[in-house]
Image (cartoon, rainbow, N blue to C red; front, side, top):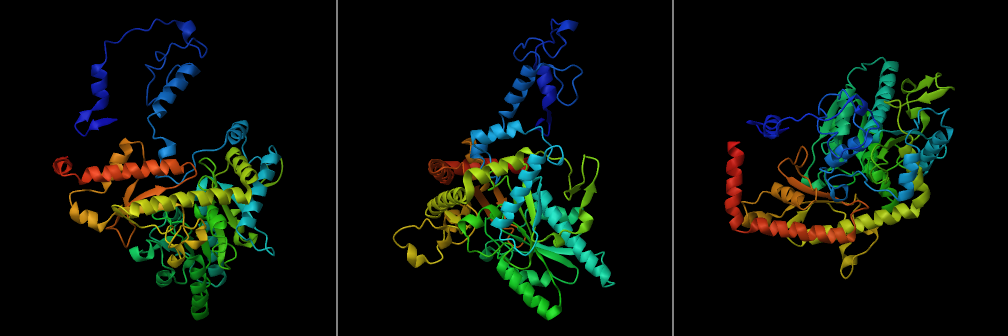
Length: 505
């Protein structure tokens, strides 16, 4: 912990305390069951080493309770796609199953059955072909799922290259520069060359399938297409990518599969855009991942990956286990993982059903459109497009509630200061809006656009289930009040002082 680069905070705090006092304790008090003396038990606990003697549970609880109170309010964390609320019955179910390890299939057969039912339900939701045998697994979020999808494509590519007597040591994978870091992690961790497709503002800061073709060659193991860009919420065009790869195969013989990163979009598109072709109804889509802990509406720690058929999950990724009481099969990167998130996912499937998920997706998108229109009519340019009608002439008098009448995408509002505002107020830095919103409790990130449009700064709000219409109205008021305060002339002097301080330090 430091106050600045020149001051040692720990030393300052130590020097500022009263003289050390001796606690009136004896050996009998050194027990986990001694009486709790408010915060005195926790006062001398070391921060960075295991304490020699433990403190009682009440003191330990209070110490951590108070410390975690410094975290941001999850309700107002608009930077994250991760879900932060579940009904009381779900919370109870999670607590009841916290001590179960879902990898122990023989010991916890009910949890295993629930897991398999979740995979089946997702396969049906994503239009898995009836003639195939869809296979999948729960993972520790979409990051693990993406790595499994990439590994499966790499193994199949290597096998085909070996059979053809060709070099199989230089695989590459293609995806847009707007990709979430997990996609790049896969490539770096598993020795696959990353071929990033630069993005353009006019394309919505996402990969244009036409531009991706030039990065593909005989060493390409696959293309990852993103259903819901982290930057702006746009859906990339899976069907167009498929059709272009069909044409490429006709011309070159290259047979390139698609993995869909549906971390967020795979739990939005089926309900808000049921006619959009992006899932297993697109022939080249061999695998799809999603985050149960995003718009699957489960707490953090749950992802899913499905393959359209078990033939796409290479046998080298499947391990047969004999030491847990029966013959079991594992094809995840990590071994042990909690059963509770999987059971929580099934709770949502049963509790909400298709119509319940649809209702929440509609509400999230409706609130996102409200926020988009409010910002666009004031000092901002909105970069996301879920509020833009596909046929503007049909929206002249009233706004439709059907997401299919608008551009498809996540309930995300990406925006920046308008050119007009920046011309009149050149001293205002967009990053200050993020800082000042934090003083009101809102967590709204400001970041640079990806490769190809790096000079654009973006503010982004993720509209989750917990961001109600009332909170949207409050957010609009706070954003506008802050922006207007920054535009005031007296603030010019403060901005000059701030920039001078930044340059010095």
